[in-house]
Length: 453
Image 1: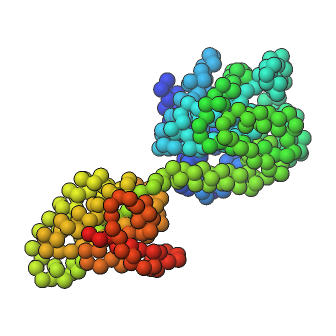
Image 2: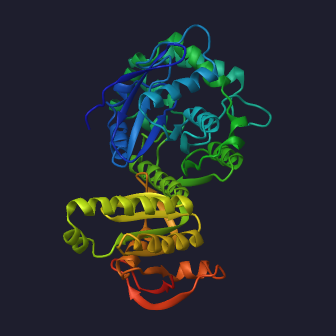
């Protein structure tokens, strides 16, 4: 996969945040990566390249370097606020043109992803957390964290080893506390990690960032998260990490956990294929749920002029044009009267939706009466069902059924499905049974009724 171009998003306080966009799938995923990153050097790790390449088959993956590291602007001597770090993420999504995004937080990046989900619910399509790390510091009610003394000791040791190729194996074991021993035996991985450390962040900025990391606490945001949320953990992980993940999941309403069997401290290490499938499954579930929100119960109505070709031939083009215009005006006036929504107009036909079947039936009957004075006849077909919003228009099986019912109607017929007839019982309509019909492209047979106009 070709490395995407590195671009820059500018935050409200003027900081330039480096980002890339890989893939062109139908869902946006922003990867809020753990600890230090360097957008371009990360691509040199084959397992990372495979992760992004495979995610890019079903998503548009947005990557970025946090302020203070990689290709982004360096931080000042003061710690950036949590608000500033959220603005970094928002600025990247704005620059990438992402209106709704699935936030994928790995490791300590999970805290920022969780805060984003809670702060911008309208922009968060879903939240996927790789482990449940949302706080670093120990607290009586958060026993999985580090004490300040332990953090400072770890930072001192890390600074001594940072980017030191001669002690690369030792640095690898410290950077990856769970799987470092295995990773340190891979010379290519150790060499890559040392390059990341040297290029991603200076030792001084590492100290600043480590204290930011230590001070971050996203626990209070967890109960506020509204987006669909899933946490990922692996069975080989330490027991305390699994406990932390389960605790975090319990704080987020409606969240779920998926457990993977393979190795991998981060999503781009170890069993990458398993990680990709976990993301794919969640993205698919989120899109399916989102699609359900775009479905509403509605009554669809299709009408068209009967024998339009013959009428046009008999009256001539000029008169036919005027006749169609008067027909359209009459139909639109009646749609407005009965609160119908015009979805599409093709030639001499109309497709409209209504929020009530009774209004739809009355509208169809009035259209039949109104156009008779023009010397033409129309036919209409109606059905009530779940209507999906597809590319801004109504679609789905209910629309197909309504269209097929209209296609079997005769002159001045208003044909309705059994659903419409049942829902309008007691509304004063009289129907004749038009029998069971097969509708082209629709499974089974459908009982159709004819309105007595």
